[in-house]
Length: 220
Image (cartoon, rainbow, N blue to C red):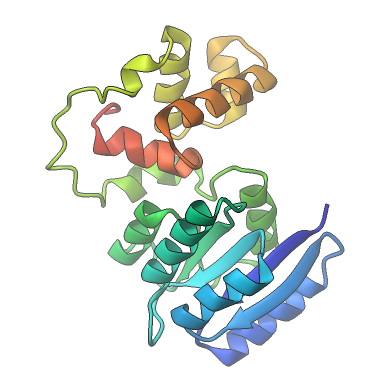
């Protein structure tokens, strides 16, 4: 399966480099680029990419608002929702965490190695977050959860005991293989549980699961 990739960034030279990198891969197809968030929203509407590489700081409309509009439009239209990877020059800054909360599936630094960027595109397309487990806690400590009550949401109470166990491990940033070893089950079983958990909680992906866990103080 070919993964369709779009890029939204206000730096022409950076766009050229990413376009060449993505186009060099047999399993990736570069479907378009835009120079600001507003153009990016229109680009995604017309090209229907699988993965969007989204700069955060841009003129006209920033990457956070563009991400929100892209995902909201896809949900409202009943179309397949693209995965968004936000790009930033600042490690773990507030803008990156706001973009994750807005629905992005992960974030990368702009100076990441090319091979890491390519791997991130494939990983996100497969439904997994581009967040190493070791970085998950540091990232979500940036979220302000002072408004959380610590009371389990009603939909969370609908999870089975096994699903709660899997949720708590995933919420702490463990990978499927790590959860499988911890719970003495197969990775396929973990994937099935994760899919059911996301559906019951109305979450898009594992990044949203971690946000949910931290915002409701379900993990320490």
